[in-house]
Length: 107
Image (cartoon, rainbow, N blue to C red; front, side, top):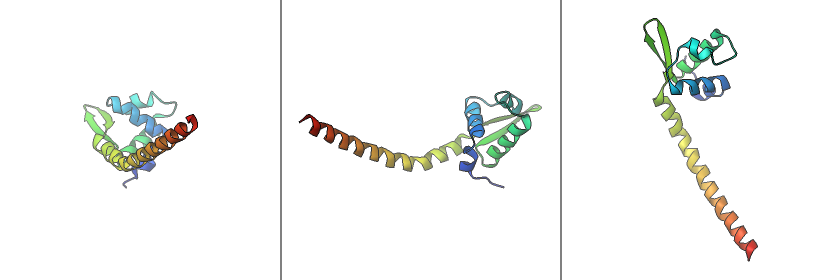
């Protein structure tokens, strides 16, 4: 089952896991050490992140390492870019209004 990426990142624990593995690949035990929860709960979060392709697994010997799937993060960033442009335009318009008001106030 493919999960929706935005539902996956809505959870604060999953966002924290993404932040951790963005720096370096980690085992589930190493990830779990950073949370006040069970290893099983962390595994569930990792499964959800894997199902929506935000993280990838790599077997190294007997350990599985989880790392961030940069391609998927780029997809999310690309989707968000359209909103970033809209908001930047609105902020620029607001700056102009505020400058005009300030100019009129000083006159």
